[in-house]
Length: 205
Image (cartoon, rainbow, N blue to C red):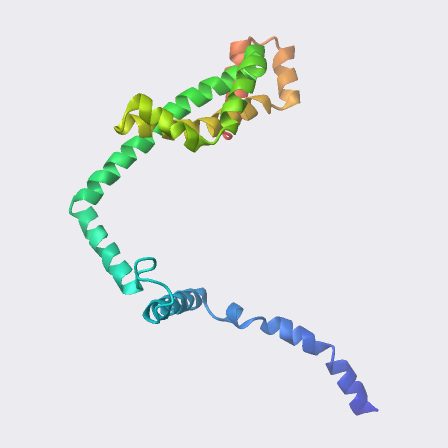
């Protein structure tokens, strides 16, 4: 009876021991498990190409890809064509984002603060936003050419709507009690906007 009792008392502890031990991947450090998994993927990739499961034109072997990446890195550091094109792309992104920030924030203020913006401008902007952005690329290229400005316009067009929506949401999401406080103190509309609504909208923007 004592032996049976000891066995019955020990049996519930077995699942707890298994939970304490956990999975083998929880016991292996990440600095070891992640590189191991990457090596396995590279090995499978290499074997798939070597056995001609897929064509080298579709999926080159890992060694060729690493060699090409190393060549591109050297070209970038020495100021070759990769660095030149990277600088052009960076200019397109930065100018496009600045244009989107200015126009998106200004229209966001218009939509949140005026009835004209809410009732007239916002439905038009929602209709434009519903259209696929890629559809506007040929129009921008036809109007602005193949130079930098067509890419800048497309970058600004893509980044414009998130900034507009976040600005309007931040301005409209003012705490009701704080708004009543400003109203009870008869604060001017401009002061309410600068002291209350704009600081509230900045985290959204």
